[in-house]
Image (cartoon, rainbow, N blue to C red):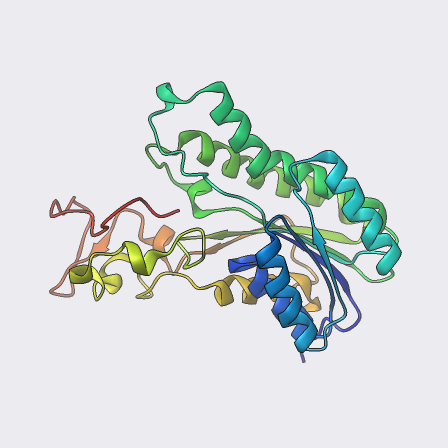
Length: 282
């Protein structure tokens, strides 16, 4: 039986998409849930959902890219729950900065760093005293990206920070193992969220072609990531630490191979357009 009964949890960026799905799944399994969210509308929506479900929750409007906000968040969790069992570092975004590396500005680098790596360092360090108070085993779950494991033109700096999360996860797992705290990561492929609305970006003529792009036949859903997070937060993964789950429908395993309409496979370019009407997915 899967349960998180009584566990005190924190989900950053928990107001929408993957973060909200994780927060609601944790709450449904009996966890106490703290949600950190920068957007007041999203925070109000997830608060209403958690409250209606009878979850013991704390809603904190916080920009985790700011040290003062992180410190205040931990103070609030300490007052409300007294300790922390599970931390989900969910915040991350490519910020729409798709450009050749040579065109990146120092400000681009700083924005991407604070959004994708600095805040993860800051929240984790601030959370450790609360996690070390926990009587049960602890779990830190870092949400990365499949871009940590493949090259992506135009997203070089973003990919570099996501790759750094892999090293952070592995090394921190070694440091915290003696405290009974496990550290793992989830690396999602393109997922339908407020950040990336894949269904809207696909040209209508390509909307039935997902089986040709993703081996399991579709792009990700927030519930897929929530399922991985539940596994990593629960005792089902009691002997798993330092690992990354590639949440990608088999895309990384496929490498450059794609399924073609006749059912076969090819790893050569199919130059007939990208299939997207605007923008690029994560």
